[in-house]
Length: 208
Image (cartoon, rainbow, N blue to C red; front, top):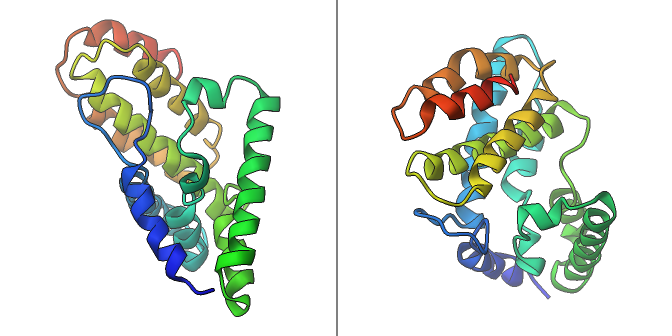
């Protein structure tokens, strides 16, 4: 028993495609998503710190980098399925947590098990770092889905993902980073010509 299997699991994340079952012009893997979320969390953390918020950077990086590692066990479930109802979401989370606990017990050396229990279990909590992770995760989803929207992807799910991401990010509007995001970053994202932009922006504005 060593850390070999943990490192091998990183290869699994490179083969798990996000938004499975839907046509996409640019496929994204869970590994790439984890890197982007960590980078976005870093940006958001900078904004928070600039506004006087104390950031535990070690916690933020750990939460962000590892937040989807356990998808190596169950894959990336389709978003509409994953969030169909709270009961189903809870069942999926229970299965994921059980498999993660078994993995840690069987594959992680005892002296490191507490560390990996902290890293691999749910990081989206009510701490500043947990909230930043929740925001960063949805910001990446927003950018990922927007990439398909501007390419006129016929799958309606990407507009649904984009609008759902806005709604979730808005739940954290008490955070300085969210205020900054919608005032300074988001307008630049939408400042791009694409088919159906006028109607889409009208939809977006209903959520702002």
